[in-house]
Image (cartoon, rainbow, N blue to C red):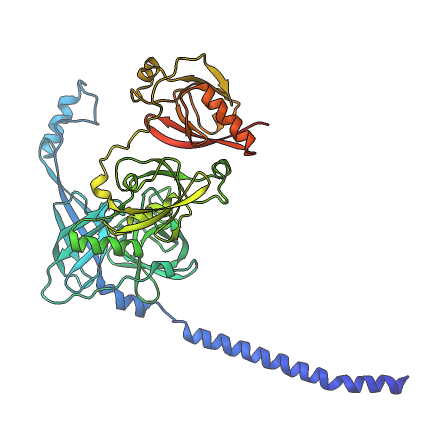
Length: 491
């Protein structure tokens, strides 16, 4: 037994020795890798900051503000103290005299001939703009063009020689967790650098073309218009807004993505204004119940609620179409479609694929210019060749419905020849109420077909049940604005 045990122990010894050597070698490799990584990582951001600082500028604006005509806001009008405060204002030169108001912001130079990018809200309404460089030199600036939709402004300064500038980087390549540097003039304290990471991407605040990079790099008032740099010294964002309960940085800042800014700046340089593509439709997102009601395979696309006179109408697009592809790119939601259309050249002919009545149709649309159509009034869908005789109101799917009459049209303020059903009341315990339908709404379509009577509505309900679908798609108009709502059909 002892001999056998010794034999076994002897045969395992080389294996254990090899294993120990392998583990030792692996540990050495890991240590070496850490040393190499540490050597590759910069010890300080100072070299990068020193390189890009000459291209970052402080912006000071001034505006003449009309003086007060009286002590408004101090005492109520007619107060016995009104004369006293008026005299006080006059003694302090407040009275009717105008005064000059100043504001501070940041920006950065994008070309050696003096083009400067900043936020529109930094220079809006200013009658004098001064740009201060890192070396203390000041130059007067003039506005080349602005875009309130993205809050971007392009300025121009005239210098004696070429100016240091920074290039735009690819904001789409920025990853959550990548290091970034914010530079600017926070709280008017002068040039300042802060570092952080990309916290999130593709953030939307309130604008149609929003594409913000979220960062925890400190951004404060005065940083507006300043650049957000990647570690290659490229601008990947323009610092625009912060989320804060007290006006100071709490680590939630937003920078407009450089890929958006770059396109805007190019148009401002060339035309002095923006020229965005315009499709000419009103749209809403496709929800799961709308997708089921329409027979869509997945919840995606942009549902067309109205087609006013314009490029889409000329191409044959209709209310109720679902745009599933634009210029060869799949449409996921309305936000993505609006951005893609806006980024397309005016006058370009694009192929748009729509889902209509269970099949796909390809339309060729020549895009118009959005800025020219901003004041256009959307068309109101009209239906029916003649008005049906009045019917008794009836409750269906939690909705008390009645056909539109001249009297109802007048009461609701709708078009004189609009045909549909008026909603007189909505059961507060119904799905219709939960989906936002209210008294005064007008239903013009059910199941993507026009309706003029309660009988039409009940027929659409029966057809949906017969087809085995769970929802009925309604086109609802409120104050002229159309939207689609999918209501569940009880068995």
